[in-house]
Length: 105
Length: 162
Image (cartoon, rainbow over all chains, first blue to last red):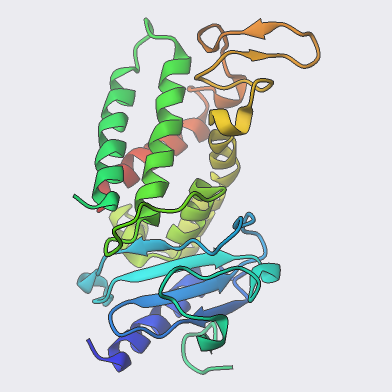
């Protein structure tokens, strides 16, 4: 799958998630060739503990989600402070997506 | 079998057993115990990266976090027959406090001083020791509409999880 297709899905999920949870303040996309990787900031989420732990979802082509995805919710104070999952890179690698899933901030 | 498949398979089996325990002759604590275990395996299953050989990491509040994450999954919303994302959010939000209480039933959270459906505990005020089978767990009334809704949601999630 191309990076462009992954990015499109990342933006779609960012938009869907923000629509479902308007309290999401920021969405960070960690580019990867095969999987959509998002960290979303939600003040009302319980503390993560000692690391960012995503939930993983299989591809759902029927919903325009052809790539697998890993989604993590974190609190604002955890951004750039908690270690990321293995293979996700560093916080500096993240692309912040606008919550409407279209324009980067 | 992957860790993910194994956790979800275990969740399905424990959920089937939980439903079989829905009998007046069985102490409620056993059903509640299985409900807590099902939710734990369900959340662990979703935390397991299908492409990863290692087991999922231990994390806090996994069930509440899973439910908050599922609000934004269009596939889950569709499978649970919700057309409107906002109504689906309200449905999930209405159950988060109960999900938190269920998570706290785990022995690791309850310790030896809080009621839990698996191990005896000592009331810190009275000093009395209780066994789960003798306790009626008033915060988890199985006739309460919210509890019924929560159990139905967990049952549905276990069935659609893959």
